[in-house]
Length: 218
Image (cartoon, rainbow, N blue to C red; front, side, top):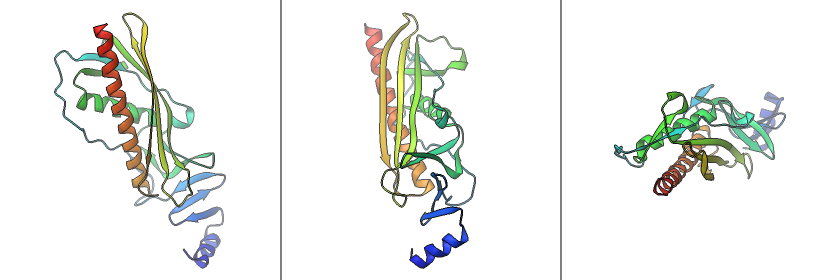
Protein backbone atom coordinates (compact mmCIF):
# COMPACT_ATOMS: atom_id res chain seq x y z
CA UNK A 1 0.00 0.00 0.00
CA UNK A 2 1.44 3.38 -0.99
CA UNK A 3 1.81 6.35 1.35
CA UNK A 4 -0.82 8.22 -0.68
CA UNK A 5 -3.36 5.39 -0.20
CA UNK A 6 -2.71 5.23 3.54
CA UNK A 7 -3.20 8.98 3.83
CA UNK A 8 -6.46 8.74 1.89
CA UNK A 9 -7.78 5.99 4.19
CA UNK A 10 -6.82 7.99 7.27
CA UNK A 11 -8.88 10.92 6.04
CA UNK A 12 -11.79 8.59 5.21
CA UNK A 13 -12.02 6.84 8.61
CA UNK A 14 -10.46 9.20 11.19
CA UNK A 15 -11.54 7.26 14.35
CA UNK A 16 -9.57 4.16 13.25
CA UNK A 17 -5.84 3.59 12.77
CA UNK A 18 -5.14 1.82 9.49
CA UNK A 19 -2.33 -0.66 10.07
CA UNK A 20 -2.54 -3.08 7.15
CA UNK A 21 -4.74 -3.99 4.18
CA UNK A 22 -7.85 -5.61 5.59
CA UNK A 23 -6.78 -5.14 9.22
CA UNK A 24 -7.91 -2.34 11.50
CA UNK A 25 -6.82 -1.45 15.00
CA UNK A 26 -9.72 0.17 16.81
CA UNK A 27 -9.02 2.48 19.71
CA UNK A 28 -8.22 1.75 22.42
CA UNK A 29 -6.10 -1.31 21.55
CA UNK A 30 -8.90 -3.56 20.34
CA UNK A 31 -7.89 -5.46 17.23
CA UNK A 32 -10.55 -5.71 14.55
CA UNK A 33 -10.42 -7.81 11.41
CA UNK A 34 -12.57 -7.03 8.40
CA UNK A 35 -14.75 -9.98 7.36
CA UNK A 36 -13.92 -11.89 4.19
CA UNK A 37 -17.48 -12.02 2.87
CA UNK A 38 -20.37 -10.73 4.95
CA UNK A 39 -20.51 -8.93 8.30
CA UNK A 40 -21.73 -10.64 11.46
CA UNK A 41 -20.35 -14.00 10.30
CA UNK A 42 -20.72 -16.95 12.66
CA UNK A 43 -18.03 -19.63 12.77
CA UNK A 44 -17.91 -23.18 14.06
CA UNK A 45 -14.85 -25.37 14.59
CA UNK A 46 -13.88 -27.72 11.79
CA UNK A 47 -13.70 -31.43 12.56
CA UNK A 48 -12.90 -34.46 10.43
CA UNK A 49 -12.52 -37.74 12.38
CA UNK A 50 -9.01 -39.16 12.12
CA UNK A 51 -10.52 -42.63 12.43
CA UNK A 52 -13.92 -44.21 12.86
CA UNK A 53 -13.63 -46.17 16.09
CA UNK A 54 -16.10 -49.01 16.68
CA UNK A 55 -17.77 -48.47 20.03
CA UNK A 56 -16.91 -51.28 22.44
CA UNK A 57 -19.75 -52.92 24.37
CA UNK A 58 -17.55 -52.52 27.43
CA UNK A 59 -16.88 -48.82 26.86
CA UNK A 60 -16.43 -47.04 30.18
CA UNK A 61 -18.87 -44.15 30.71
CA UNK A 62 -17.21 -40.82 31.51
CA UNK A 63 -18.97 -37.56 32.33
CA UNK A 64 -17.52 -34.55 30.52
CA UNK A 65 -18.42 -31.55 32.66
CA UNK A 66 -19.14 -28.16 31.15
CA UNK A 67 -15.93 -26.17 30.81
CA UNK A 68 -15.09 -23.33 33.18
CA UNK A 69 -13.35 -20.29 31.71
CA UNK A 70 -12.36 -16.70 32.57
CA UNK A 71 -14.97 -14.07 31.73
CA UNK A 72 -13.07 -12.87 28.64
CA UNK A 73 -13.24 -16.38 27.17
CA UNK A 74 -16.84 -17.08 28.16
CA UNK A 75 -18.41 -15.14 25.30
CA UNK A 76 -19.10 -16.17 21.72
CA UNK A 77 -16.41 -13.78 20.52
CA UNK A 78 -13.03 -14.50 18.94
CA UNK A 79 -10.40 -13.18 21.34
CA UNK A 80 -7.38 -11.42 19.84
CA UNK A 81 -4.32 -10.02 21.64
CA UNK A 82 -1.78 -7.48 20.46
CA UNK A 83 0.97 -5.96 22.63
CA UNK A 84 -0.85 -7.06 25.77
CA UNK A 85 -4.17 -5.49 24.76
CA UNK A 86 -7.11 -7.89 24.63
CA UNK A 87 -9.94 -7.36 22.17
CA UNK A 88 -12.40 -9.20 19.97
CA UNK A 89 -12.53 -9.84 16.25
CA UNK A 90 -14.98 -7.40 14.68
CA UNK A 91 -18.09 -8.55 12.83
CA UNK A 92 -17.38 -12.21 13.59
CA UNK A 93 -18.28 -14.60 16.39
CA UNK A 94 -18.33 -18.24 17.31
CA UNK A 95 -21.63 -20.04 16.84
CA UNK A 96 -21.67 -20.57 20.63
CA UNK A 97 -19.53 -19.40 23.58
CA UNK A 98 -15.96 -20.72 23.37
CA UNK A 99 -16.24 -23.11 26.38
CA UNK A 100 -19.35 -24.72 24.87
CA UNK A 101 -17.67 -24.86 21.48
CA UNK A 102 -14.67 -26.74 22.90
CA UNK A 103 -16.91 -28.98 25.03
CA UNK A 104 -18.87 -30.05 21.96
CA UNK A 105 -15.60 -30.75 20.15
CA UNK A 106 -14.43 -32.97 23.01
CA UNK A 107 -17.65 -35.00 22.97
CA UNK A 108 -17.49 -35.33 19.16
CA UNK A 109 -13.87 -36.53 19.19
CA UNK A 110 -14.52 -39.02 22.00
CA UNK A 111 -17.57 -40.40 20.19
CA UNK A 112 -15.80 -40.68 16.83
CA UNK A 113 -12.30 -41.76 17.81
CA UNK A 114 -12.27 -43.21 21.33
CA UNK A 115 -14.19 -46.51 21.42
CA UNK A 116 -12.87 -47.35 24.90
CA UNK A 117 -14.83 -44.53 26.54
CA UNK A 118 -18.48 -43.52 26.33
CA UNK A 119 -18.74 -39.74 26.85
CA UNK A 120 -21.86 -38.32 28.44
CA UNK A 121 -22.77 -34.80 29.47
CA UNK A 122 -23.43 -33.85 33.07
CA UNK A 123 -27.03 -32.95 32.29
CA UNK A 124 -27.68 -36.42 30.82
CA UNK A 125 -28.15 -37.85 34.32
CA UNK A 126 -26.10 -40.96 33.53
CA UNK A 127 -24.33 -42.67 36.44
CA UNK A 128 -20.65 -42.90 35.59
CA UNK A 129 -17.63 -43.77 37.69
CA UNK A 130 -15.39 -41.21 36.02
CA UNK A 131 -15.87 -37.48 35.72
CA UNK A 132 -13.69 -35.05 33.76
CA UNK A 133 -13.57 -31.47 35.02
CA UNK A 134 -12.15 -28.91 32.62
CA UNK A 135 -11.00 -25.31 32.54
CA UNK A 136 -10.21 -23.34 29.39
CA UNK A 137 -7.17 -21.21 30.27
CA UNK A 138 -6.34 -19.73 26.85
CA UNK A 139 -8.29 -19.49 23.59
CA UNK A 140 -6.90 -16.56 21.64
CA UNK A 141 -5.20 -15.30 18.50
CA UNK A 142 -1.99 -13.48 19.41
CA UNK A 143 -0.34 -10.98 17.10
CA UNK A 144 3.19 -11.74 18.27
CA UNK A 145 4.86 -10.24 15.18
CA UNK A 146 2.83 -7.38 13.73
CA UNK A 147 -0.74 -6.82 12.58
CA UNK A 148 0.20 -7.51 8.98
CA UNK A 149 1.39 -11.02 9.85
CA UNK A 150 -0.71 -14.09 10.60
CA UNK A 151 -1.39 -14.50 14.33
CA UNK A 152 -0.41 -17.44 16.52
CA UNK A 153 -3.36 -19.34 17.99
CA UNK A 154 -3.02 -20.46 21.61
CA UNK A 155 -5.28 -23.09 23.16
CA UNK A 156 -4.68 -24.24 26.72
CA UNK A 157 -6.93 -26.66 28.58
CA UNK A 158 -6.59 -27.92 32.13
CA UNK A 159 -8.18 -31.27 32.98
CA UNK A 160 -8.87 -33.15 36.17
CA UNK A 161 -10.10 -36.74 36.17
CA UNK A 162 -12.07 -37.90 39.19
CA UNK A 163 -12.96 -41.43 40.29
CA UNK A 164 -16.38 -40.88 41.83
CA UNK A 165 -16.41 -44.27 43.57
CA UNK A 166 -13.27 -43.59 45.58
CA UNK A 167 -13.63 -39.78 45.47
CA UNK A 168 -10.03 -39.50 44.33
CA UNK A 169 -8.43 -37.35 41.69
CA UNK A 170 -6.66 -39.91 39.55
CA UNK A 171 -5.16 -37.53 37.02
CA UNK A 172 -4.28 -33.90 36.36
CA UNK A 173 -3.15 -32.59 33.00
CA UNK A 174 -2.59 -29.25 31.29
CA UNK A 175 -2.44 -29.30 27.50
CA UNK A 176 -1.25 -26.39 25.40
CA UNK A 177 -1.11 -26.14 21.62
CA UNK A 178 0.08 -23.34 19.33
CA UNK A 179 -0.76 -23.09 15.63
CA UNK A 180 0.25 -20.29 13.29
CA UNK A 181 -2.61 -19.20 11.01
CA UNK A 182 -1.85 -19.48 7.31
CA UNK A 183 -2.88 -15.87 6.77
CA UNK A 184 -4.29 -12.78 8.46
CA UNK A 185 -7.87 -13.51 7.36
CA UNK A 186 -10.84 -14.64 9.37
CA UNK A 187 -11.14 -17.97 7.56
CA UNK A 188 -7.46 -18.79 8.05
CA UNK A 189 -7.62 -17.80 11.72
CA UNK A 190 -10.69 -19.98 12.35
CA UNK A 191 -8.98 -22.93 10.62
CA UNK A 192 -5.96 -22.49 12.90
CA UNK A 193 -8.26 -22.42 15.94
CA UNK A 194 -9.79 -25.69 14.71
CA UNK A 195 -6.38 -27.31 14.24
CA UNK A 196 -5.14 -26.24 17.67
CA UNK A 197 -8.39 -27.29 19.38
CA UNK A 198 -8.43 -30.71 17.71
CA UNK A 199 -4.80 -31.33 18.67
CA UNK A 200 -5.55 -30.47 22.31
CA UNK A 201 -8.70 -32.60 22.38
CA UNK A 202 -6.99 -35.63 20.85
CA UNK A 203 -4.16 -35.41 23.38
CA UNK A 204 -6.81 -35.13 26.10
CA UNK A 205 -8.52 -38.27 24.80
CA UNK A 206 -5.29 -40.31 24.78
CA UNK A 207 -4.51 -39.17 28.30
CA UNK A 208 -8.02 -40.01 29.56
CA UNK A 209 -7.89 -43.54 28.12
CA UNK A 210 -4.49 -44.17 29.75
CA UNK A 211 -5.63 -42.85 33.14
CA UNK A 212 -8.88 -44.87 33.13
CA UNK A 213 -7.08 -48.06 32.04
CA UNK A 214 -4.45 -47.64 34.76
CA UNK A 215 -7.13 -47.04 37.39
CA UNK A 216 -9.20 -50.01 36.25
CA UNK A 217 -6.20 -52.34 36.39
CA UNK A 218 -5.04 -50.98 39.73
